[in-house]
Length: 387
Image (cartoon, rainbow, N blue to C red; front, side, top):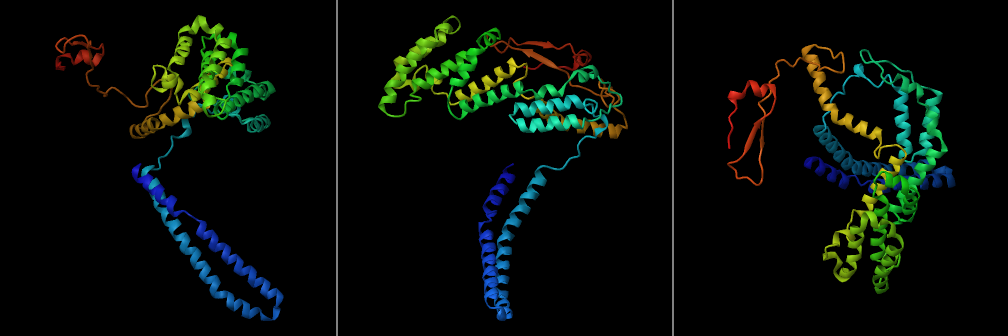
């Protein structure tokens, strides 16, 4: 990747098209002036064109000279890309197990768009999917275990305004958290969902309140200067007395830590509570926790299933390519999902030795145990236990 990075930096330096744009503009200005001259004096057309010939040729030469460096850098960068990321064929679609589940795929795509806040795109996709439903193509040798489920799936349920409003509310709260450093919308939402969150054993409501305490303590919302430094802890203490009363049963120790930090205010960064008040990742962690709990209350996972499936597929591609090559070499067929594409009777695995060692024992008291692997049992005489 170092070579690729160098080529990328070189391309960034050489891909400055500002000079080329200036030269093109100068050429356009020459042509405009020539047109105005001809329009004002039609009798001297040949003289005007003769005077224009050399400047235009020089302008084109200058433009080509400017672009030559850009093309050179682009060619080198393209070669570096091709050398690093070699083109490999994708696995064939002969064993496409998803071709028989178009409704599930459409639902996953629509839900992903809704989760990403792309409501207009999701609406257009649902309309087109309903107008032109894809035809299921059963894969040979792969039965459809979700036949009844696909019949029960109604893509129209994803068009409901209620679902879109809920995701719109989630993105509004996340925007306030990440960009506005405003915890109030998230705290209000967590307060309305307090019973459900407590039933799940979630810490979100207290995490939001604790971060609000820290934000107030450090002078958030007051401005800068000595006034903010002195008013911050007092505002945080007032907030804690008002809001932390019903948290004492579960989070008494955490509340005591927040209160104990008041004594270290002049040197808080080097105090035992510095990690609480000077955590650069605190806002992003709370935003991730909020997203996870919000989706969980909707019966959804925190991450998009489509994203997880695409990531898992990308990770599995090299293995699938190797299996496909094995099938071509062995001239075998992969007929079911519960078998390997090649015979494994010649596969030999090295003996497995598991050594359990306690940190309280000396190095001469290592307990060595052979696993219950069949190969280990057969090769037991060959295994040498070394210190």
